[in-house]
Image 1 (cartoon, rainbow, N blue to C red):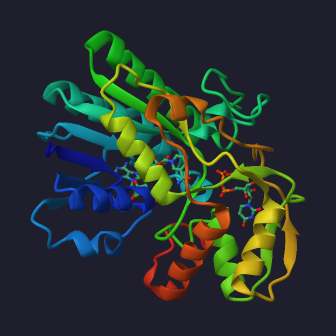
Image 2: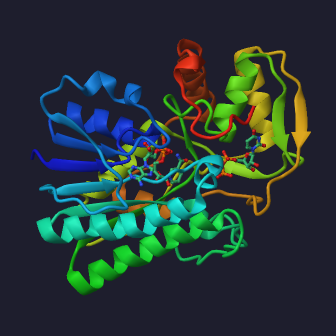
Amino acid sequence: MIHRILITGGAGFLGSHLCERLVTEGHDVICLDNFFTSQKTNIQHLLGEPNFEILRHDITLPIFLEVDQIYNMACPAAPGHYQYNPIKTIKTSVLGSINMLGVAKRCGARILQASTSEVYGDPEVHPQVESYRGSVNPIGIRACYDEGKRVAETLFMDYHRSNNVDVRIVRIFNTYGPRMHPYDGRVVSNFIRQALNNEDITIFGDGSQTRSFCYRNDLVDAIIAMMNNETNFVGPVNIGNPTEFTILELAEKIIELSGSSSRLIHKPLPSDDPTRRRPDISLAKAQLGWEPKIALAEGLQHTLDWFQGIKLQDYRPPTPNYS
Ligand code: NAD
Ligand code: UDP
């Protein structure tokens, strides 16, 4: 069945892949973005397609559109991006969700929220299961993102219970791949950029903190499956790769794959940086029949190849360049 689909944040790293997949499947796709952390080049190759349309708009403001599915992906995701204007970040999650839930309610559309592993904060339960309620510092520098996303989940569930809106919630764990903003300050993009230029690789803290990295194709498969699941399962569901690495291990793998002569240097650990993170994906396996297929070395190789093909000067740093 062909759907009319709205993707907010559609020009971003994950949103642009989602646009590509859904346009290829023949759906009518509206990509809505304010281009805060992205640029038109991410979706330029889709501009000539008859079933693709782009709207410059900010989801903190209301909009009237006619659609049957909404992927609410709009929100700065990298710590440096969401801390750049923290008040705007929380408005994007809260006012943006209210506006998009309003569109879904008016049109009878199904709406999926891109939530995050950050709702678990610095977790005391490991690996993280969906029933764990999290440990977020509500007044820390990550709270604009974490608490915004937690309120967004609340809004989604309340629109579902009170107004019968057809919702889906996915909690995305660290995802990487081609088209990450090269200056977003996230660990994969920083390390790859530094390795390819033989610059020092910046390990924050001692590098013993862990993350579990999911390749973007696996992630996009999962969120499309969640949107189209016809059971009454609304989530939240963890989506991520359960193989856990320390940040030091990640740096060593990137040096090995790129043949770089970079050295490792240490910088202070930012406050509230979670010490460990790994999704329990049993629920996604049981409900969606999904699990990731792409191992870190393979995904990093694709990402390295993409970084080697881009011109860094084509990318406008939206925030001060971290390197
Ligand atoms: P991204 O920064 O590349 O994409 C976000 C997009 O949203 C950008 O194109 C940006 O310009 C747009 N945007 C931001 N504020 C907006 C607003 N007010 N109105 C309209 N557009 C706006 O980040 P991403 O990694 O592609 O993340 C996409 C979504 O997935 C985000 O909601 C993020 O919180 C979530 N997520 C991502 C990860 C990850 O590891 N990539 C992990 C957890 C959750
Ligand atoms: N990190 C690092 N060096 C960098 C960028 C990040 O050591 O140049 C660390 C960061 O402190 C965190 C982990 O890598 O522990 C993942 O950071 P990222 O910003 O990618 O995402 P997070 O999972 O913290 O939101």
